[in-house]
Image 1 (cartoon, helix red, strand yellow):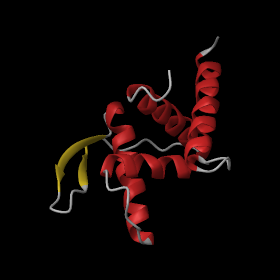
Image 2 (image 1 turned 90 degrees about the vertical axis):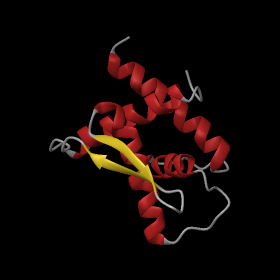
Image 3 (image 1 turned 90 degrees about the horizontal axis):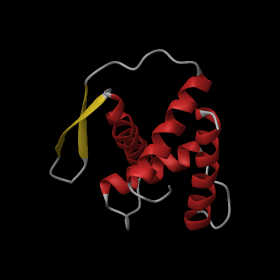
Image 4 (image 1 turned 60 degrees about the vertical axis):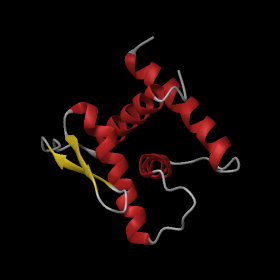
Length: 118
């Protein structure tokens, strides 16, 4: 099976599993899954978040997801427990489809690392 086919198969399995667990059967989209990673990384689950905090959660997730690719590096936790990252390398200019593939690959790798999927 090609690398793209394996990624697609794992992505579909991940979306199904997360959607079943967190969205009452509704299908989670890419942004929803990134948001879940942000919550996971912050670890403050039982709290309501304002719009700007939700954006920050997604930023945390993106930094964490792209850290293994060398784009970000964890820096520190602030007094409220929010992780902060520093940019190591600027992201390349990618087309929308390329961005989507990169994020799906990073999400699949993240959830495999966490042993949520295999």
